[in-house]
Image (tube, rainbow, N blue to C red; front, side, top):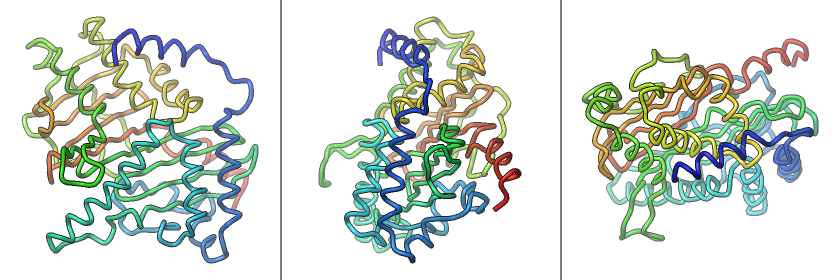
Length: 342
């Protein structure tokens, strides 16, 4: 994304005003109700839980164990309605990425079966859905979509979106030029290229400031904790960037904001702006060349982005958005549960 495009999008997003609940929340609620209406009693037992259920705040980007109503436990018409629900929470680009990730998980499963090992949690059949409290207009409820390389959580409080985090997208294989159905593909291309191009644009002194280690970590540094606390600011500060580099960092952050549907990306962007763009840090480890192992982190006072080509393979990518105080709508949901015991 060119700097002018990023800044224009920033102006568009921050200039809009919502007097009513976002249209996506209205569509999301209606889609959730239609999906649940098609479930039988056994399916409802898997898919519907109370808001205070421990699973609501169990961050499991790799599903151990698998819980929820899985794809292989649904009828085709139910799977179709679930996809309609997913579309209400994601931008068109992010929804396409999600479908590619799920398809690729079956490719991975076939590859692993050919090698004689296939973890039970791999494959599209294991992707699953859970709701916490009953979706209703103006209500407080939450839902999670989960599988090997997807973790999405949406929290609605009194009919208004409060949280789109944690949000995890991964892929393996991420970059395939040939030899597989649908090739070529490269699912996390923007995430890799925009981070690498920003690092490459730095001069020697800036690169030294941005580089925080010599060895790429095995996985995301923030791990799989339910709650993530801010790390000590590390890397290169926004204030040490040129204006062009600041625009490139804005574009990178907006790439992750834009995973959400058009009128829901405000929730993430507001956290960036409330903390202040000038307080962002960009940290880097690894080789910026395409397909090489690399890690980067963008941190502000209220949010964290991580990208990592994990230790298992440079073609195995994990990315995440975390909110330090807003994951799962934690504070408002605590108030809701205190005043509405379940």
